[in-house]
Image 1 (cartoon, rainbow, N blue to C red):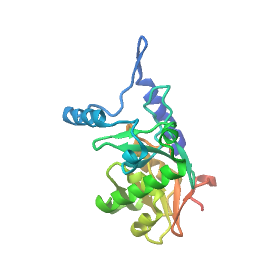
Image 2: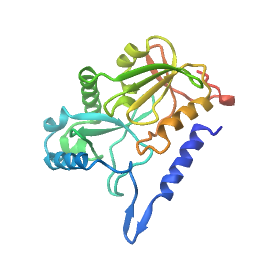
Image 3: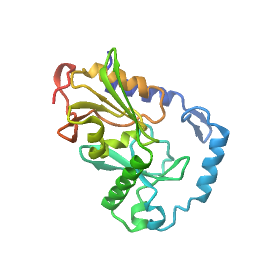
Length: 238
């Protein structure tokens, strides 16, 4: 059984192999074909977006976006990414309805706000989204992984790693292993699972996905999200 790190490495390699060069152009598939109507709605929303507008214009639409493995941006675009305890790489997007407009590292200066304000504002907005569009929670028993809790949101399920009060209402006090393979899903497994099982669950959700996340494993314990720091022999030890 491959480790989670090895499996991620193979998926990165396959993405690179799918890149096709045409002179000075580089074409890389993102997530397959897109519904034409959705594409039109995204283009219309993007036309209405004014990136140069002042902070109050965008503050209520700012949401946290956990960093993806693959960053589909031109070389001169540097998305803003903060390291949020306990070691979660968090970027930000402006919610324009059918899509997110990722902000770059210069937005905070242009808006005249610090990184702490960006993070606090985005988390407050995420709290509001959780109230108005509650996450979809599924509880089931898997033959391999055992007792599973799957948490999905409207494109932000993984970001619930940043809201322990929300997780507490879903997971309760029982310790769990937390996986966030893709942007819209957070999966909670029992503490009895092995790293091989975690890798299998991760691959089942992330293999072939354009939004696989660049994350480690985490724990849910004592009302906190904690980062997994490693253990011998492929066992989950905290």
